[in-house]
Image 1 (cartoon, one colour):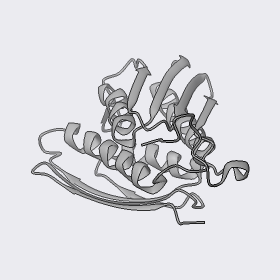
Image 2 (tube, one colour; image 1 turned 120 degrees about the vertical axis):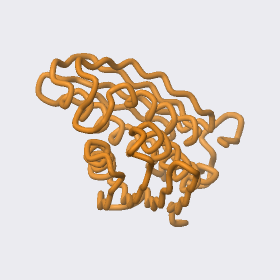
Image 3 (cartoon, helix red, strand yellow; image 1 turned 120 degrees about the horizontal axis):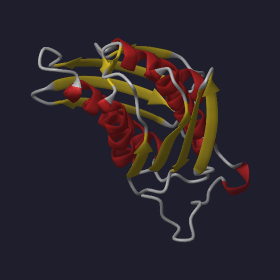
Image 4 (cartoon, helix red, strand yellow; image 1 turned 180 degrees about the vertical axis):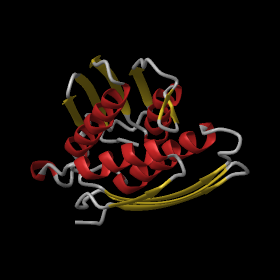
Length: 198
């Protein structure tokens, strides 16, 4: 099987990002974005999705966290798009409902070749660690748009913001793991009646 890997180098006047992704990994990760809570959440994506992820990001955190969080989401989406290639043989759709104590999160994805993010989340506080809660939805939407995938994310329950956001990213990991798997019955086929997923 062709290796499903990607290397993304993205540099703007606001951020510099180096990212490596191996979809068929073991859950290994090396992540340093300068935003500790974002690092923690991306580690969940790697570990629970069984993706190998390396990210080094330097952003204008002296301004605020927005550009760094947004551009990491964009870069991770680009990496999935690149690594999936023509998307032949993939299961394509996946979903997960994940609890973390009192919190419960639902994420469903379709690696359709069309970018669309629908995110229904709310938090009580303005920040979780150094991560502005207002950027959680923006990160997921940026990831979906650049990854050319449909992503629906919803918090079904929760009182603790940390639990809610962690359940959300673990659900994202499990949904992506399911959707990116190879279905051996259609190994050389594109899972679409259009015969095209990009």
